[in-house]
Amino acid sequence: MIFEEVAKEIVEKVFGGIGVIIIGRDGIPLAMHLKEGAELDLETLGIEYSNLLAQIDQASQNIGTGKLVEFSLHTDQYLVVVRTITPDYFICLVMSPDGNFGKGRYLLRVNLPKLQAEF
Amino acid sequence: MIFEEVAKEIVEKVFGGIGVIIIGRDGIPLAMHLKEGAELDLETLGIEYSNLLAQIDQASQNIGTGKLVEFSLHTDQYLVVVRTITPDYFICLVMSPDGNFGKGRYLLRVNLPKLQAEF
Image (cartoon, rainbow over all chains, first blue to last red):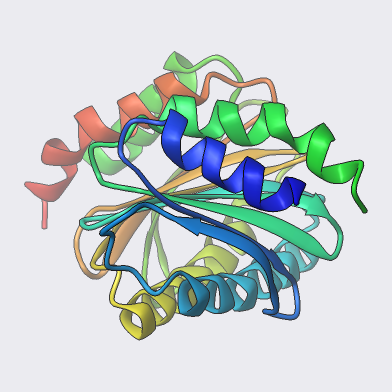
């Protein structure tokens, strides 16, 4: 399936890539790929981020800052980039803190048309 | 006051810079600078983002992804970068969608020690 292929390709191509999950706004995962040996509960993470997306959308509506395209988070353990695929689905890339943030964002962006074509 | 100076400097130095607000987690602003002629309710935006920070912190705790350092949002109208100054204060930079994201993040990072020294 194209979703698994894209998820795997992104994790493998970006320095520091740990996992990619494609997930619905309702928290139901569509596809995911976790780097071999990585200890990360990607599914739980995806569910938390789908909650977060709803909060961010609400905040954006409250202040009139427009439709959300992408958001990213840097914690002391992870770099996370989340990009909207359709109004109902998004893709989430998790990297190590020293991961290549720019390349990660680029890979999500260039793979978007391929993913969108499937919906 | 150093807070206003830093806010102004960042807005002026970054391409696409619209406004900077330094604000408490409780939503009370400490200092802000808005580009002349810009139509943006920076205070309301700051309050919404302080809510969002609380949600993100909660999500991070739930999934054990560590302490939040920075988060950024791209909507079709704005680029926003938020960076933690202390556990109680953060700085928020708002740029136009074509703004220099990398330079904005850089300016927040290099000005951090100056701001932290004031707390």
